[in-house]
Image (cartoon, helix red, strand yellow):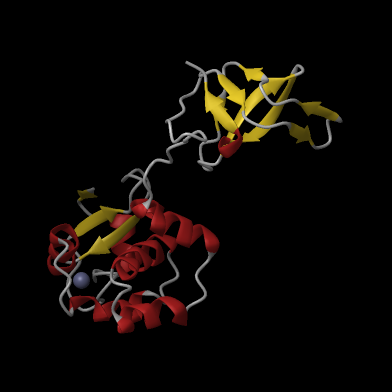
Length: 188
Ligand SMILES: [Zn+2]
């Protein structure tokens, strides 16, 4: 998403594109999934960098990121990392990616653009949804809860663990436990 440059952002970038730092900054580009509500989410871009980003036309233009990966702003780092990550089959891009110790939060922000929503599949490859009923396909030793859930146990109203497609949560013996999707079968 892009919008006009606020005076605060103008001050931060000193009128210059925060990626190539040569051309005049003309747009405030919000690094997804964030939007233009605060300048911490934005990168000031020149017309050329913006058009290359939007057109996904890589070329040699992105060699300029060798400078922007040393920027102090997380939004500039996340955008630089994201672009380089998309080009990482090129040796120079890969070298730049590994030349800086990026903060974990910057990397997470950057690669969010490449992550698809996780799909949870049962042991048969059937997609699971929140609220489904499943059957355990093998006995589970529930750590810390001191009981064994036998094979064939029915678990109703499961919850998908959002950031881990291999895990769901469900209630067994009145306790909510984490269950691996490979040990369950969706109940018809
Ligand atoms: Zn630029």
